[in-house]
Length: 404
Image (cartoon, rainbow, N blue to C red; front, side):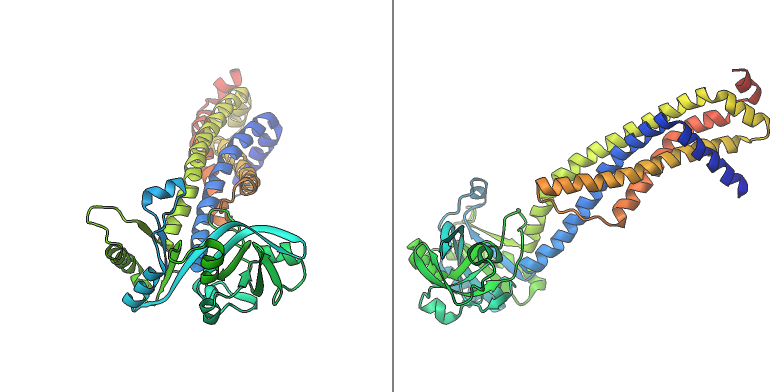
């Protein structure tokens, strides 16, 4: 054991003595490990975000959006879904305990006592907070009676509340929505950003009858239908049944594409995976290339080191050092350098991911896995690329080494 301690002590002294070689080895390893760290952290962040999305969206929920698949690429939604569709789904599906039609109007100016804010107005049926599992933290949701009489009432998000009211309580007060006086009846729980990075807290939610009649001049069409089922374990089957049912309702001939789209929480997760996938692939390629380059840098520097230290190796062998002592010393140096590179790479990965989150809202989550995988990969690089020069040093003949 003491012999092993002495070997690694000498390896540490060599690492300290050869500062320039050590710096380049550590730097090359750190760049590759930082890329790998970001990959692992991004993957874990995507999985964690996926679970959050399922909880927020609702594993028992589906979203029906008007417009064919090809219309999504040009951000166009045809007027397809109607209030009649909502009633038909409610009657046909016994396990659908909630069918909520919704519409929205963007870039609406709302104001209160001179404070103005541009926001999105969402029209919904009653129990919006229950439909989206989005608690009202102050006041209450609007009611079925508000829906029937097209009442001028609203729920507002936290961002809208801060912009209009500051620290003042908004419940019971009137805001102007396109010059229409609307009473605030409740404030929604703060939610933050959506999957695509948009702000969820900057909205005003009003009865859909009010929005259609007074803001859209519409009596029939809605943008979205949200359906929640009691039997969430059968959600995939319900999605297919909804597609078949709506094709029949809309009288779509066989062979023609749907004029609507149905999304479940699984589709939202697929979107997130696609969003982060390109980053993972890009950083993964960079990371692997960087690790290979780092390995070659380490191997070349160690070959150079063996040539420079040939006489030292010969003297050590002549006074009793065995081949495996020399082998373990050089491998120890490689492991020390790659361990330092792995630690620096992990810290560099954290710094880079912070910048990445600042530039773009990628879900990133660091855990012991990112650290462990980075460290293990750095050790593998050290052993694989350090073994050949270490073996060469160990196989030097003492007399020939001293003569050289």
